[in-house]
Length: 324
Image (cartoon, rainbow, N blue to C red; front, top):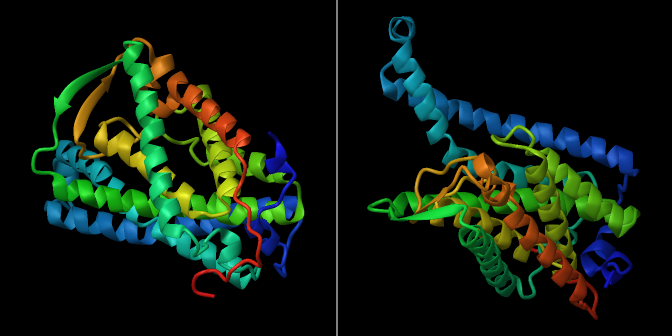
């Protein structure tokens, strides 16, 4: 059952060919530096977007002092309207992570999980599993009486809904490429698989510490999701499936069921499900489903299932990654 921590899939074996394989502590410091660089790079287009938003609002200069209530409303509106651009800007995360891996560590795209074989199939299956897992967590919360269904609310927002799907496709890939494709595989190429899985999962949780509603259970669930995502990547020997799973998990939660995604509201959803103030330990409260025991149960079961499954066997030399 624990063979995943003893066997190295082909993407890890390929990463062992890297020219630069730093010590674990150095790798963590590099990860922090890369993450901060990514955040600064993402800030530039977001600041530009915010500037344009204020220009279009018609408020500026002395107006700010004369009408502070309008400014407050504008800031609240800007915060709501920044969610989608923030998701789309995570394309920078994918790009800079790939640049680092190829230019500094001299790793191939294959070693990051960008395999050609069964890529489309893995993506579709991963996306389906993400929806199923989130739906099961929602069903558990609903059966426990901690969630109420308030109906279909999409209206004419199909265009915005599709834009959010695109945003979550980009965001899901960005986080998985950074945490699993780069950091986990790089650590595993020199250290134990167990250290690689635990360290990237803890980092994944830490990256969310400033989200609304963060608490002990959300941090535990984020760590569990990191472990699940790590095992999924190692078992499938590919990054595609977990990218899709991450995408549909977030999209289903926020834009299908209308629930906060890691403490963040989305602007449009198909349906409206309201989390009750009672039973927040199950439904996650202000953090969304990911902050409750319903998701804890789903993730623990998911991890156990993954551990019991045999990983994908590659009996030939790894193919070159896309773009190599």
